[in-house]
Image (tube, rainbow, N blue to C red; front, top):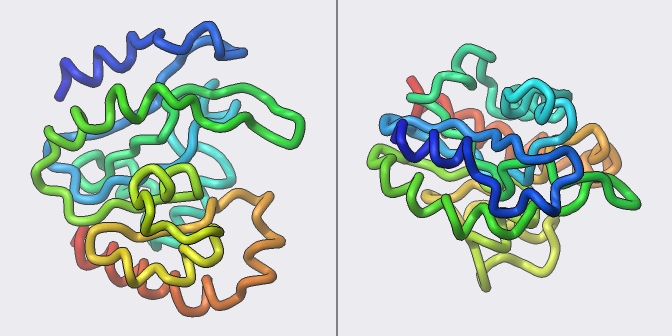
Length: 190
């Protein structure tokens, strides 16, 4: 695992497309029990090198009901985004994750984590990639049908503060889905 993580840290396959240059942000351990697959680091995470070290990460830890200590314990959580580097700024927010990372590195990482119990897919990029045809047409439909993807996958919207409108419009998510997520995560990491 250490050699693979070192190779990822040196990756430059899409560097010509990265506005701030490569800085892969990923964490994993052979004993990881839960994998979190989000989109790609934002500028704050690019600068710190710490996954989910931003407002989205605070919200995600709230949904999971875990402390920072547990969240950053690699034997509990592996953090493997769809794109490992900050993809750059687009017209309405960050650009999509670079498409090179997941096919290049994900399988190799998963093959070295035999104790995985759950894969949390955050946002449409992760859901479309991993659920393929079983993903619904919209993120809302996919998340509303979260139980269809269990026990292997748990699907979530992005916890970004920009998603406040979605959360307000879909109160069932925090009322019904988040408690099930918290319970599942607590059982796995306890």
